[in-house]
Amino acid sequence: MRSLINYIITLIIKVLPETRLFKFKNRLYQIYGLQLKENIKICSSARFLGVGNISIGSDTWIGPEVLMVSTSNISIGDNVDIAPRVYIGTGTHEIGVDGLRMAGKGIKKDVVIGSGTWIGTGAVILPGVTIGKMCIIAAGAVVNKDVPENTMVGGVPAKVIKILKDNV
Image (cartoon, rainbow, N blue to C red):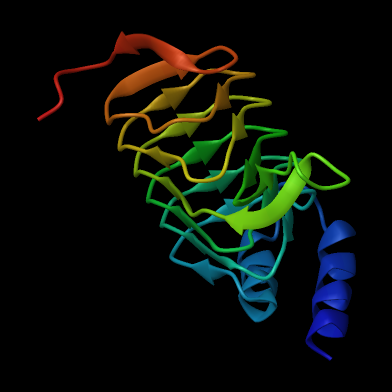
């Protein structure tokens, strides 16, 4: 029954204007199971999949075609900006060299994104990553390791480009 309700909610959201009716969409997302604080703006083409928990802080922007797949927990702080086509996922696999396929046993690892962070277009945030407060993740970056607060990273895999201010 729950999956039917979520399916209907997803269909309703898909037909709503991309960057309008945010309060209405947020109410639907809360019924869907997302934990939302105040003044969150989620574009209609954003997708949330999986059975894990997703919590999003106040004054956060989730851009078009963002995909979050949660098998455990995704926690996003306040004042975060997530550009279009960002992927955030919590599930992966162990390497299965002894079986019939390389994707071995499934594992899940939480993702945490600190307050004030800006994630650029097309970035990929992989399972188990913690991004500190006030970071910039460059467009197209693949983040596979933790990012200290006040740091800009970019590239594949993401590497430190610049320290934005002294970490206190």
